[in-house]
Length: 340
Image (tube, rainbow, N blue to C red; front, side):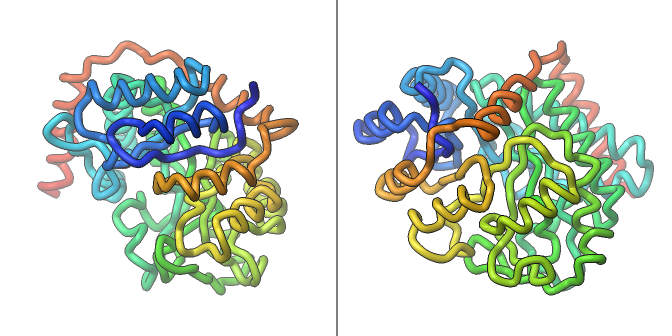
């Protein structure tokens, strides 16, 4: 059977009977994990394994947001703390080669943590370029404020994940850095001229257009489409994401349950698919909403199916890696930032 074009969250540390029935019947393409789903390594591995068993795909993608800093679903006592993206930017300013090395090493260590649990996709890197006055939702998650620097560090982060056998998801395309509101709570509108967006925000994503997957921004760009955020804008997806930026990989929405989007969950899901996203992401684990998403998403087919297959085929086997030595090296690099 063919998977449906959505990625689902679940409610807790283990699947309920109703969730098992839902997953077995609706066949979501992937599972995304949050802190509410994570207690200990064996428990996470069991949850991942059961999901894959229910959908009948041993390599079904399991996703997580493990960036470092304040966006980290895994943490002590079982998993290390990693620095936020801005730390790599600060080291890059001191020595670009060391900044890239630290970014690559951090994501390589994160990948090792994830692969141990069977998690094969990390929603990283960010290529958002924040500006003065923007909402703090991006803040120190960003690598910097110059597009070329952001793209270079994002590439290093991607390399570390890929070397560890984890697929990256580029976000939040075509840019969340100018948003003056947190799209978890309300819809941001950016009134910047298209020429400036192309020179800054969009420019950070262009060198990363070859990545296998990307996640949209729930942001209105009034110069391009004053009525719809990028996630539900056929104009932005066609002209900017697929066109100007040149991204041809699997395009997933940011979380369909975020308050930036209007209408019912069913309405939002239809709008996301109609606009040209390949995949709907639903995160909160509410079963009634999960059912609405499933009803409104098609089975993967045609171009979306091809992109999904190519994305999964891009995952590499982890390269040999001395985790203890890598962690010591990362700590030494972080000390360089602290003493600068």
